[in-house]
Length: 264
Image (cartoon, rainbow, N blue to C red; front, side):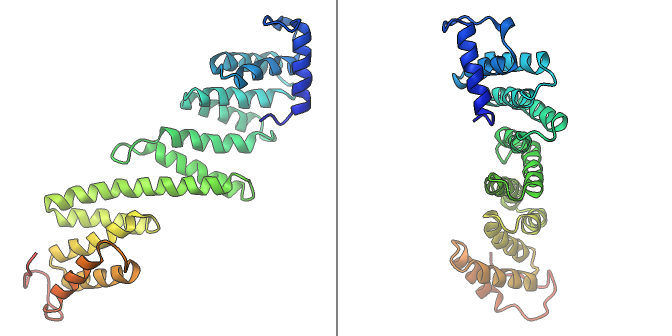
């Protein structure tokens, strides 16, 4: 919604008069508010391609007028609505950098993060856009702690963190299924160190214990399974963790790695 409703409606009325209330508009006769209203009408009607063209005209033709920052915002929005996210990011950042006092500045910061969020790929693919989105949302939250979009930004950060955690979990699962337990352990440790507060932590914590068990690092495995059951007593892996602790009961205290083996 426009932050300049009075000027916008004045522009709409003036545009209607200049066009004789018909479909054709004499754009050369439009002032800055009238031209903005003309472009905004196209935007509101979903004609984002034409809207982006007309908002560009406003920013160039009426440079220095108070309407320009709003036109710059809706220029970025037009590309966002068209799912042209990289172009939208460029236009949002132009607003942020050139109009730091604009009332649209904070919205633009949020929408840069949201643009990267929309481009974020599935967890098994490259996660550069995911990391970019998370950084932008984190900056937004830190710089705008009382903004109404702060809570939404934090929810999106949580979603992005889970995707990054799941990315590591995929790597761990691959090595686990291949029986390469030491490599799997590295990935599980990453999940628990960086993404301990995500849903993926539960699975990572159990299979970290399983990896230690398979590597015959029995004291560490016992500690891992015990901590797992303390934190996730209702987990789907709870019965398996209890079973492993049962297996570990018969292991002599202080046994070194490789001195004995237990049934898988």
